Image 1 (cartoon, helix red, strand yellow):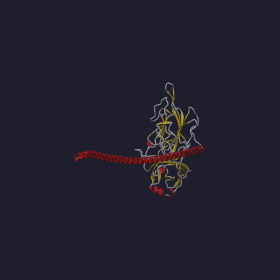
Image 2: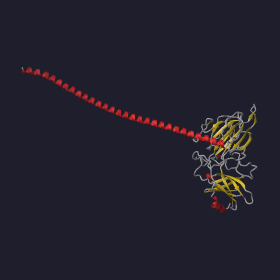
Image 3: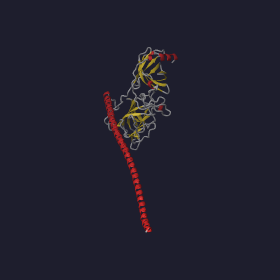
Image 4: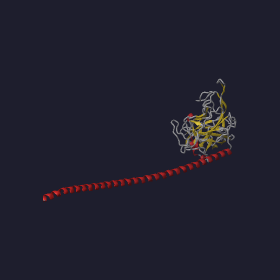
Length: 458
């Protein structure tokens, strides 16, 4: 692409698009700084310039002497100011089957300049802004506009069926070992499910961190280890081609049919149908484990047989082991986790709730929030009342202590005064006794002296 075309695109009035950018991100906590991975965001950053340009875009273009065609792109930051994108003919992954899509996906690259990115590497240039894209041919003619697309999994918010075991609903981690729940009521990575089942259906919802400077397996990594042996990979592989260790893969064994990853910080769903291996009485494996999985409501693995454990899974054996959520060091969050024992139930799976059901769930959640709010208000009122009671008791105790101190000081003063008076009285009595004694001695002396004087006189 020549520089004059770049300059004309930068200054063109066609940048004044007016698409609505819906908010699909949920705040949780501030950014973290793990070693070697750059900044990790667990909430939508306010001042990070590349974040608003990430996402999915779709629309129609019309090439010269050709019928209008639908195209789509996924774009994400990749390092400082650099971007990578995937271009699709026909629509976004999951919108069309492979037979309906025309041509292979194209990998595009670009760099951010202020508030836009120019993507190159395809048959035309795509200028990406936060609200939409402009597609320009090599002659500089605008041939189409792509609108931002915000998708949500059709199994998002799926309610647990009546025969399901609710593993996590934000109230406790009782169904897990070594599990933690954050202040937002979300399960953190690194938890082991207590119930051990042979064949089961598992539903969970997850949210990946935004890690624009990380790459590959270092970008929002976790996983679901079925019976601790077979890993269904979780990874921020948005805007990349499907790979055997990306989101939806059976880790390092089979690539997903589609890369159904949504942008990081968007809530996503994983629905997994697992059938355990079958063993003979002598411990010989008769049939391998089978997995069917859906990522964001789209089937990406269809009854795939696993010849052995995957990745770092434990060795295969007839014994049951727990299913666990992997801790790979990245802050991945989970919610709405439930499991169905297929030995006891053969109900429909996955579950795609209707809008009415979603509205009912939303109403229940709002009622739950209101109840929690009222309970918190009552608790705060009780705590305030208790605080006031204790403060009153403290004031009264202080007053009593001060009064006791004053009384003690007064008693001390009285005691000192009494001692002084007693000492004074004792002194006076001693002086009186001494005077009396002197008087008695003088009287006795006088009594002796007077007869002697009378005798001399005679």
